[in-house]
Image (cartoon, rainbow, N blue to C red; front, side, top):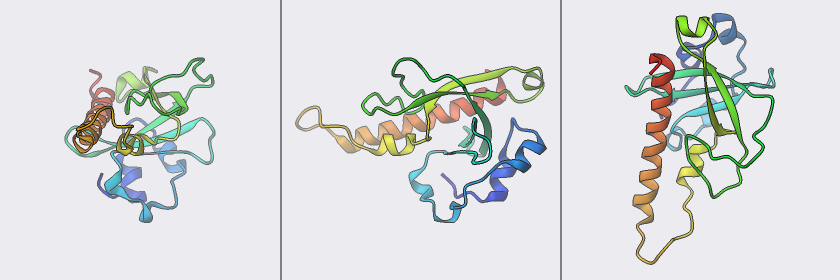
Length: 164
């Protein structure tokens, strides 16, 4: 992922009002992030308990900032994150809703997804599972998991913007 600054993050939001963007709490450690190890950048707002944000690379590579609202209720059973599809770790997966872009979003239409609570998908896909058999190509499998995460994240951003 390309390194982000506070200004580039604030200008990337597609489903938030100017007021929501101006009051958004941003992480303070942007300069020290390992951007090469991230496929997207997500965080929780320190000022608003149920608000979270993610900057996803769209299919064309441009950063797409998304305002999420976390559901009040947690899933009753163990769920799989829609982005990293991790079933090995007992991560907390929560339901996030994002307002659609444009007129559809102004009418109140939203898109929801189950995502790791702390947006650790990039770390999850880079963590190798136990080797299933001798001769298994772990590096190729890791690369495949990273590519699939990138496709799912870009697809979510595209779907939110285009409505398809």
